[in-house]
Image 1 (tube, rainbow, N blue to C red):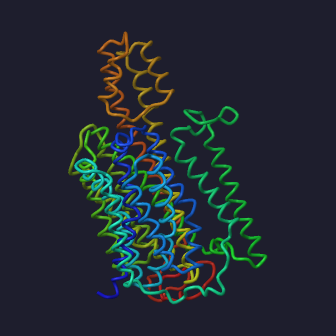
Image 2: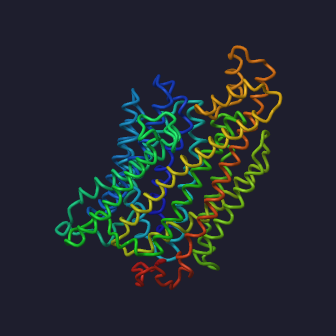
Length: 547
């Protein structure tokens, strides 16, 4: 039991890091009411949190290398706790953004890369695989349990209690830090390199712009402008902002190479990308989070908007995902007795592929409880199998001194995938609903030509995914619209919602299938005695999986 005390502390921290994001998503309506603001203001706060984490995750990893992973983990937890406390008592939206988006985001950027490195440094071989399985399962559990916990607390108490509870958990973690051993390869203060400020600016700026554009694509539009703050040559700014962010990331790579040639310490060693196993692990993590967050954007919409469930009931429906993911991720190491990590990951992707197909058949006007629960359970099993392997694969593919940098890359890939999943799958959903409702109305002889043309204009101006009752109420206020035609429009809107949801989930299915292409260089041997599969073959100093 003593050897797993470290995992208890780090597992609580991992659960904490992903919990409040999902809590905030189900508390938007209450936050709007409490702060007397608009939905867009709260969405901007949530967007800013993702931006801060994605932008500074590489920096957080480097700071861990410079000052020691355990020390930076503690500092990051303190920063995170301060942000949680400020969020719990926030009197205005501005203070909410400062406490949650900025301070908590910076704390998470310090904690997560250090956490990944501490797990790798505390365990070896199969124990490390077990530890990363638990960490991955707890991350998924936090995403799935967040809506349930947040929905219940927000509905019956107040959302502020969630963040007050986070402060308590931070204090518990800090009190139990004696269970986390001091890493053996902490940096010598006399040899500590200076932080690469230029690399921080270029990487943070590039990643922030790319994530911002993807997250705002639903509001700005991808090509045709919808409601952007500005246009570029008459086009939506989304692709231009992504392109400029990409230019900054490219400049970051050139700048880092120049520093290495001059013998200076880079923010991230680009030689890490020569490691094929690391590249495969990061790409698969990116795809996993794209699918996971895409589904967790679509499924709550189906349950709340189409089926009319409240936040707490939605969380209950998502429990099978959480339970199955936690069990599968913790048991994933048992599969390594008979299969390699590559085989387990591919099997997990196939299970996830089957789960999304099953979910497509389940989505309909009526909620089929047993079938829906089955698809959610299968979804959790697939995600858990991936979670049991990918963190261990990334960390074990590098030397011990490179683990904080690898952790920064790991969580950067996850945050980019999460951002893209929400934006891309959301765009597919809205686009499919708009296309479907326009076609259905145009082909229905019960709808007059004038009404069909007016509906088409409304759809082109921008379509929201709202309850059918809201659409019916809005149509009832339209002068000159016959009630029977209004009823037909509502009927078509409901059908279009189902088609849009199916199309969005199909997008997740395609991404899952495509992720199989990135698994080629994952470790093909079981952990015991596994050789490096990537570009540079050298033994893992801790006896774990290498590549």
